[in-house]
Image (cartoon, chains in turn red, cyan):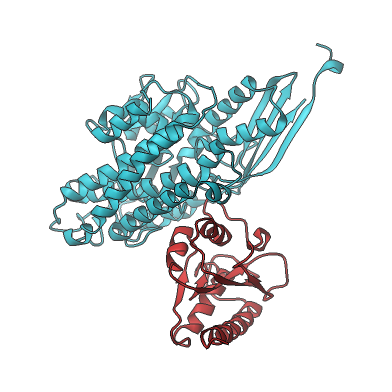
Length: 150
Length: 434
């Protein structure tokens, strides 16, 4: 399963949704979903999946468009990748809650795309739009390798 | 006392987690006594009141809902109540019942999040819900299940789990079919079961020994637990129509907070939210919620703010019970909304957000354009009381080690489930001992 996470109304925050949008219909037998990132909804969304690719925008201070690939099946996502979340628990919390509850798929790969602008509005910035294409292609190759059993 | 003998200690936490918003707190302690307390809210003002000016009266519910992702329904409900009052329209019957039902969904979502994920870790000694989940997975599962039920209720009635899109001045864009509500019943029955267990679980926590003689302010409507309408009352004799709000409550700017402080003109600070609602309206709870409260040892005389987690659990139970009652009596209305013609007037609306009373006032011209708007969220109203609690809590515990005192202060702030984003987003805690 591939889940793109983000807010469509906060510029580059929509990067994960954009990757999911590009992969929709391109992955035979693998479900592609888009989520806003609410933990209860996310944990429900990946219920039953054996392998999970999560894609979200991050803000760690790296140059815009930088792609972070993290194997989250065995370790926590670093909190400093994400913009400070407030009352809402974030994606990293959802992954750790699911791990504690035994509800995390065995294989979890996280792709974080470094955003430039998280202002109100639509449209990705240039570097982020380029990274979206690159991540979509890479995730497609990984999913196909995984499903073909190689 | 000679200054040279004064005892100076500084405790500082740069970041208080598990609250909504950005702010800080300073407690100055001189020789074991609290010299000054400031809840500093430095989140920038968000100017919602200003950009409502010039918009149509029909736009207020959707614009103000965006103030908060936790309690958007409260904003929608207070705004529609204010607009309808301005235009001389009263929405009743099943249209009103649906509003109360949607509100139950928000109470379930918000209280489940706070009781289990934000506040319970304080009492059980965990840094966060994630740390707590490793030892108490059953608590977190319950939270997720309750949250999901609240989300489903919000989706069916409001069209979306956060920031519902179905609320309008005069009622709804579309009223649900009876058959759409039916699948919610087993979910809500399960939620009620979980909430009942939760009351027992949280009642058994250890509570710091602290009480304060608050003025408690809540809405009051005969025979109903306060949610969506009523007069404003207090335990010290306040009993006014919502239209009289501005004559009795005043907002003041203090230098250390970007959220205005509220106080009662005639007296001073007051507390709104679960503790106030329970104290003044416990007799209107459903029998099941009332019994659970009694078994948990709650009485209307409860004044320990740390026990607000028990009251929230009782309100979770009530919200599930009330939602089931509302669904059982639901009949599809002939029309999803009543017509509301604008007129030049001032309208006032007040409803019970999960954290307490949320007041809206709008001035409209004859075409229904908003000329002026005022929004007073519960967290701004509770700021002074939070500061008083911090003072009281620290004075009773001035000799405890810095790290323990810091945690106790954070816990005292979280008693209020403060929503700083509403009030003006991270709370920075700083305890300075001189």
